[in-house]
Image (cartoon, rainbow, N blue to C red; front, side, top):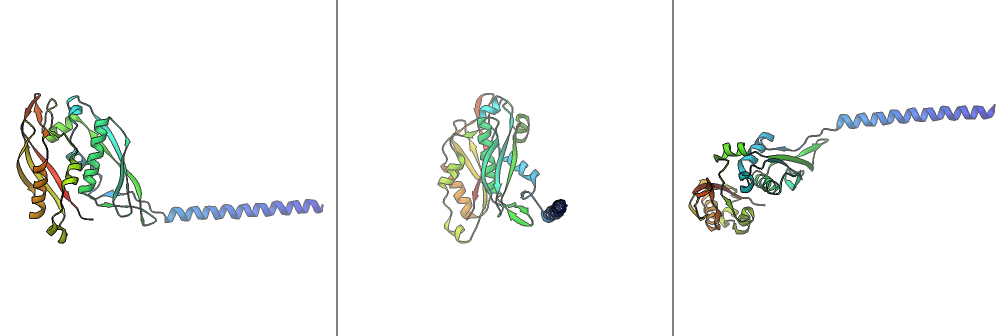
Length: 245
């Protein structure tokens, strides 16, 4: 009888502990859910503006454009707690040429327009993964860039971003006055790939404008544009970004 009493008390105590434990767990889960406010990183201007900028700065790889190679490349990256993009990388590939251009254009846009609203958790800024789709569509590119399917857009025969970064000398006066911005330079690519007719289309300051022109004038020959497979003169615009740490 005494043994049965001890057993009954043990079962009752176990039930009480289980009940209290389950209530505590439920309360903890409810509190966590009610206090957590998650927000993904947001590009300044929204997703549509980001996609528009990416499409604007795409240079369709020549062989891919000529052979009608299309696809969608996903570029993933981290937006840190300060709203800065880090570690961009291909997370869904298409082809080698499209992947390389997708990564280049996402890096370029992040340099030209670096501000993001960072992700939040419980109201605190955090580092968070995000991604963007870079769509390569021949017809859309033809319409937006005014080229024909059988035409070839001019392209540099060198790493353009590396060339700009390696030759840019920040003007002393602009640095002292904290002058920053992006200078757009227009130029003509002749049939032999040589460059001429340089002009500033979007000025920032005399010092930055002059440095942007100096860099573009220093560029080697490009691969010329082609129409009906024949080289033709083509005007081109490139942005030269000036940013201080």
